[in-house]
Image 1 (cartoon, chains in turn green, orange):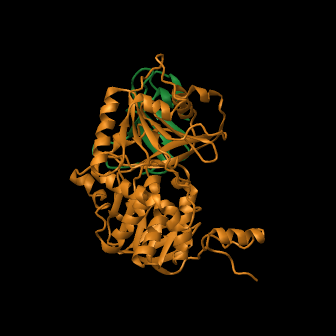
Image 2: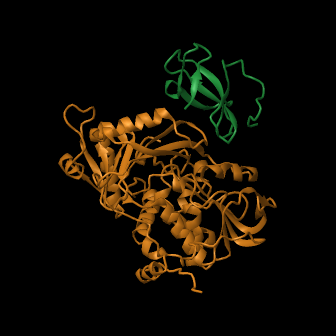
Image 3: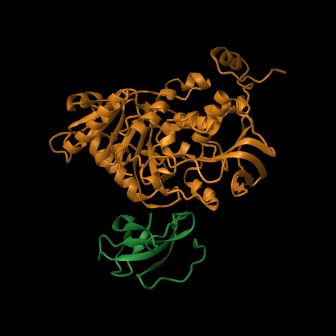
Length: 81
Length: 420
């Protein structure tokens, strides 16, 4: 189970309060999911309705960073290039 | 010193009973990797083992190695709800799953191993007019292709499912169901073991705890694989590793449009017989059957985000349990006994990817999503023919990777029991 805090409105909840929008990629980027830390778009569905960024390990589901678009973190340890 | 007993029969059972069952031979040989094979199959699940068996049995290719990084059938073959059906909508799907279903009918006899195939009947419930329309289209298409399914009215559904609660207070009124009388279940481990045993008997080498690190190529054709137990040369390599297939073939320039997603299921404590058909209910995202041991086997929708975790998550368990209780409130006091997750490999059109890909000699058999178990015999049969003859398989041919570039999608997203 994922526990997420929206970086915009600070509402916290499990995965059912949010919607995953896929990989945090630019249009036309053909990357697909792999085992490791991936950056994703998530929607604060039950709160403010904002999209934000989230870095999650697809194997152990650990969340290593959450950010507002435009404030992306630098490369994270274990992140898939 | 007695020779080990290999054949399973009533007389061998009696003989072994007299000797306290100490004389049974292992079901398959634990092989050590050799320097080279004609065909290497990556993935010792149902699809890999079935392909190896049909290569040896029907095409005489016995210099085959099946490489499994864990134990046989420990991946998605062991992590499903073992439902067998062929009530799909698209002609390509009906051909593939219909072939598989027909092979399941005689699989125990062919492999001399009881796979506990139980064609007890399968109902797909409709709780709206739209759902009735969609299932009626499927029934019509099935009839056209010789797959026996038909629509049944609510009264007949109630007679098949006396514990179904569809009273006037219910959120979803029952409109009817699509019924496939030969739909059913089988024992998933037994299917993997049966194929492994018979393939091994025919000369196939099954190598467990052998992790494939990469696939070797000269750029134009396949040379073999590099594994945790050394290099193995082979002119043909088939990858049947579900969601682990894309990272294995990506370095060869093969990009598979597959998303890994966790799918969960759970079983209850054993109960006396109360459910003698398989029930699929798309409206509430759930499906249920009762195993021969009496446990209720319950599945739901996939997790709502991709991942390789094979873990449970409380929201999905809660949602699936609520779905089942909506249909069968009498189960409210049943205790759940165990629960698991598997990583399903989902393609954009919810149909598998079968056939050659990239360098000459490379084949992929993946993208089965939530419907892989029921397709094991048909997939193995078709892939063995494709590897041998290069075409085969009319049944498998439409499932090539090039369909995504050419727009020949086989959209079966609506044929899933639940929303995937």
